[in-house]
Picture (cartoon, rainbow, N blue to C red):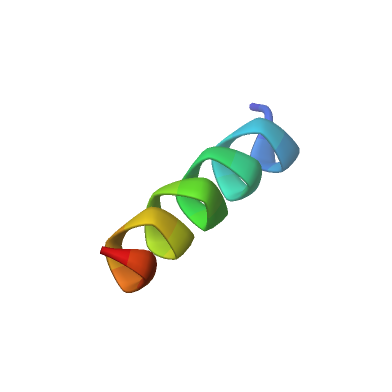
Length: 20
């Protein structure tokens, strides 16, 4: 299981949602 990949993708999505 890659928690780092999931965390990074989740963080990018969170930033995009907050920025928009």
